[in-house]
Image (cartoon, rainbow, N blue to C red; front, side, top):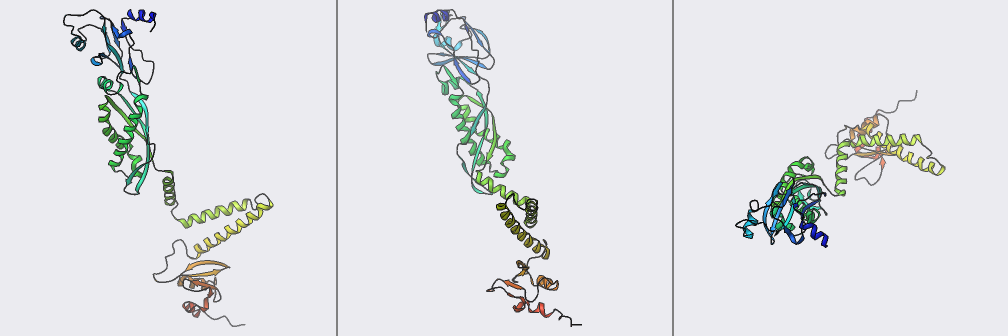
Length: 368
């Protein structure tokens, strides 16, 4: 400190802190050799405390207001200094201003997924993040336990420790509430309240108060979320057969709009795709025309047959359905059929089980 600063400080009688920052928690009032004049004016603004330290020990703490320093309003300092009969000379003391405002929007989050056990999915990994707010509750405890004699102490200096507390105790609380993972999003308020209750005592030990704790998101790993999306999609689709018909119809419509695909090379691809889609559509609609979406399953113990219709495999069909196809002329005695256990496809009239179907058919009409 230069000579000019020394002389200027000798005549300074006002002790105050005008905070122009948004993250300073503690600020030490600068004074040459820490000398304070008796009868100096102390101004403590709203959202501040002024803490006097005598030889490193916390003495008097001043709430917001304006004070003329004297032995009457510094009882602890007076006792420590032994000022029994008044005192008017300069005295040495450290003056720290402590902010009591809320420090909001402090972020917390898990660096790595946390392993938990869920009642529905079993062992899972979760990520979580959110924000919290805090303020100094007891300036004397905070100076003693955290800030010490640092001339300036900011949020950044303690934020890492507070984030670690939030994550560690927060995930413990999530595990304790035993809310299923799929229901967590609907219970953020309940989980946040439980985490706040769990963390508050540890903030108090540091002279702090946790004023708000918010969960913004709890998420599963991307691959698990993708599996859940597929499961949800299946639930929304419902009837897979009807959905397959819808998709095939859309494919045929798109193929009809652009049969050549824009070039000779694309034409072959488009034609091949059209044939493939047409074949799939024929099977889908043929099966649904004969069986119907509400057709009952084969009787227990009955082995269904497959039949070759228009050169394509169709089925499986029950004996009753095969009888209907024969009556309709869709298949005849020479149509190829197959079922599980047969070595190869065979003509329908050569399969003993199907003999009764053709024996009940009327013979051809005589020639006129």
